[in-house]
Length: 335
Ligand code: ADE
Ligand code: ZN
Image (cartoon, rainbow, N blue to C red; front, side, top):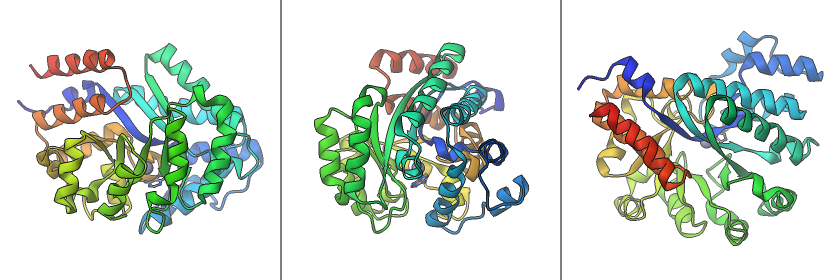
C-alpha cells in the first residue's frame, strides 16, 4: 500500500532521543535573552540560524551550550518544554522521553530543582491537555569528569522520583563509556534505568562498553554498530533499541546525504531502530520532518514505517499494556 502524507501524519509516534535544550528555537532564545538580560553572540534570529552550519558534533555542541545560557528561571524551562510539546502534538508524537543536561545549568548557578520543576510542570500540563505521555532522563555530560557526574547525582538524589532514568551525552570521541563505569553502577544500584549515546561518531567499541560496562537498555544513535557484525548480533540478541536521529546525522556529517543513511540497513539487519529528532531547533526538523524526509529520501515502504513506529513503542519505557494499546492502533491503520 502507498504511503500518503495523511497516513504518515496520523501514525502514532514516539520520541526517544530528544535533548530539551536542543529545542530552543532562535526566536525563543532571543525572547529569553531579552527577558533575562543575557547577551547573545548573534545580532539577530536570522544570524543565529545562519550560524547553524556544523562540521561535526563538537562544532554543534559549542553553539548548543552557548544558546542554553539564556535559560535561567523555572518559567524559562517551562516555556522551552511547552513549546516542544506543541510540536509533538502537531506531529502526532503521543509519547516522548526527554533528556535534560543539568550540568549545563548548575555550572551557571541555576539550581537543579529549578530546571527539574519547569520541565516537569510542562510535561504534566501536556499530559493533562493533550494526552501526551512522557519520561524524563537526566544526562551526564561525558566531557566532564566522573566526579562531576557524581556531584550531579548527589544533587539529584532528593528528587529521584521525578526522573525516570539516566543517560550519557556530549563530546563522544575521547570520552568512552568506561570513564563512567562507577557512576552508572551507582545509578543501577539506585534502580535507575540507563541509556547512553554511543556509535554516533565513536567506534563500535564504545557501543560494546555501553552495553557491557554501563548495562544500558538502549543505545542513542548507534549507527556505527553496523561496522561490527558481532555487535549487531548482540544488539539483536538483547533486543536493544537504537534511537536513530536521521536529520541530526546529516547535519553533523555522520552521513553526507539523507539518501546515504543506513536506517534501512539497520532495519534489514533486524535491529530495533527508531526515528527521533535529537536537537530539532539546530538540525532543521522535529520528529514529523524526520519521518517525512526519511520516507522520501530512502523510499521507505508502509511496512518499514509501521515497523519503525512499533519499534518506538517497544523501545519506550511505557508499560507493556500501554505499548500494546498504541501498537494495536498502528496495526489497525495498516490492516
Ligand atoms: N547533546 C545534544 N545533542 C547531542 C548529540 N547528538 N550527541 C551528543 N551529545 C549531544
Ligand atoms: Zn543526542
